[in-house]
Image (cartoon, rainbow, N blue to C red; front, top):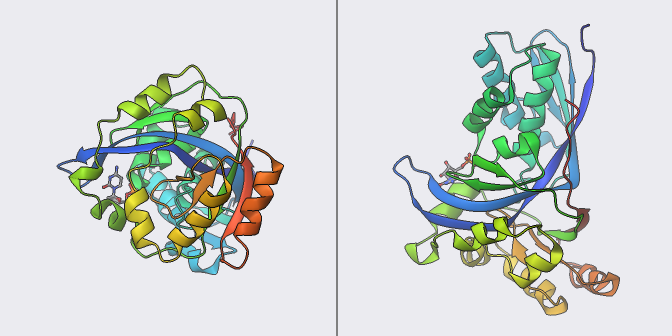
Length: 291
Ligand code: C5P
């Protein structure tokens, strides 16, 4: 039976830990990271059409400017079919913030188009198309919690953790060519051997307690606080009112904290007033994708 309209959530991710081990010969860096999806999500809707159109409520991400366009074209070429779909994206995940929004939209589009176009490609094939789009896209095909190694695309799924509340903080604004700029700002002094991330991955269950006692490590923290305008002010305001230090997500500038109670949470929200930063209370989520 032909599929008509498919509407799918594209969940944001945070990096609960992110270490860079060193530079590789292919221009990428070898990483060890723990990725976890949270229930802040964009919505990606796919409909049959003649030709390809990509519409987005963020007009800077229209058409070919959207990574979803690249996802549709890459899948169509891989499968030897025409890229025929009308795709609309409702953004809720802050853009270029380190929360995987674009990568997750691309992953949702790949899963949806696999159904819409009746391709039935196995997971491993979708994952190879995903890896050609970005290092985080393979993880976001399935989500949950995973240890990522290689350039972040070699994944070991981790057992689902108890639901944990996180407060995401997204400072307004980002910078152009963000991810390469942040990788380029690292020096060998920032590198580590990945042991802390592997230890966290081996702990029986990822809970707020293990995370806070093993305090999250993100290799980009130093560079991000220097590079993103206004980040250090927002970061210090949050750090001043929370018991556990904030953790950067990906290459930033978004970060998260784990307020111990509602009073602490309210203090964070109050501390962000007039900074242009937004706060999003989220829960970790281990989705079982329907498509
Ligand atoms: O894979 P993705 O498109 O997210 O990477 C964007 C850029 O970030 C790469 O071109 C590379 O400069 C840098 N990068 C890296 N090592 C990684 C992931 C990304 O150097 N593991």
